[in-house]
Amino acid sequence: MENGYLHLTKEELLSKITQLEIEINDLQQLMGKVREHKHNYSEDFGLVVVAPIEGLVNELLNNKDVFTEDEIKEIIESYKASMQMHGAYECLGWPVDIQLKRVKESMVPQIRKNAALYTSILQRKIEFNDKWLVGKLQMACDEATHLCENLANIEHFDYGAAAPFSICTEIKKVFNDDRRASGYRGESSIYIDYLFGEFADLKVSMNEKGFRKYVLGNIIKNLHEHAFKEIDELELSHKIINKKFSWWTKFVVKLLPYSVRMRYMAMYKDVENFKIPEKRIRISIRPSHKDSQRVDIIIENNGKPFYGNIEKVFENGIGEGSGIGLYSAQQFLNAYNANITMFTNADNEYKVGFIINTPIL
Image 1 (cartoon, one colour):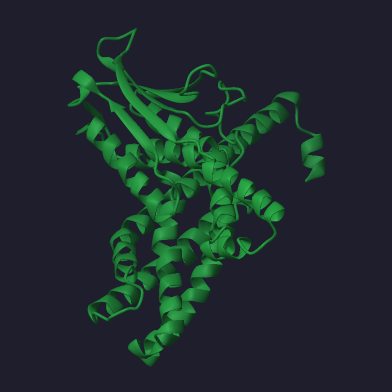
Image 2 (spheres, one colour):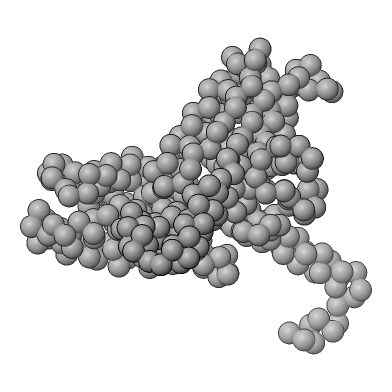
């Protein structure tokens, strides 16, 4: 083989290198696609694979008698397979051909098998201790087919057909749902100010489900993981400290010497009077300066200032996390002749924001 290469002319060698570069570029694009869409399916993967089987295992530990022997065996086997599958799904370092093979030959059949188990359990209308378990199982069954189709065609992914929808209605629904979810997680709710004005009935044409997942979903994820992360951590610390100052502790303190009691009460007063910063989002719409058939949707927040390079935040692999979320939002919008940019304003109450520029109907 080496002798064969030694006898190649300069033109023939250049041709082989050029062909190799094309193949490498195609492989890099495929790897980028797989990585991006595994990231975007991660939430669906959690809802379909992780949450329901963990719920069933917890129910099994606390309420074993409601299950048949065959169901117990299937639950244990599915739990083991699902946790192995979850670990494999998160392993992005494997060669792309191995990733694709595992996704298609192992994960997709296991997800379908899990969904069949959940369906049979739901049909028996079991009374679970966990009041949320039926909903988790039903959601997994509803989403399993769609997730399997996406994973089976992960390298041939497209964002779906465009269709008209009310973008303001979609934005309000997604952000209000997230605000309720924050409450369920025990976090302080986010105050959202919607300033749609004359654009309240605005319609755009793109894939609505994709806009929800790839654009709004990734913006909201960015808010929780970056903009409001410090406020949430501060709030958690405050709750822990406050818990230590229980009514019983305060009662015991009254029995302490006066000087010690005064020091304690001063410390408690500082904790009691400490104000957690309010989390605020403002969403507004304005006409585009460059085109009367386009608008700017502005989503800004009062969270942590951004000190990085705003020109690079939409590049693949840039950021503190996976570096895929905002890149994916940009890719989706570009597919429908729209785009997204980021801006900062350290002197304003709303310090960081995104501008989605999109054509309108």
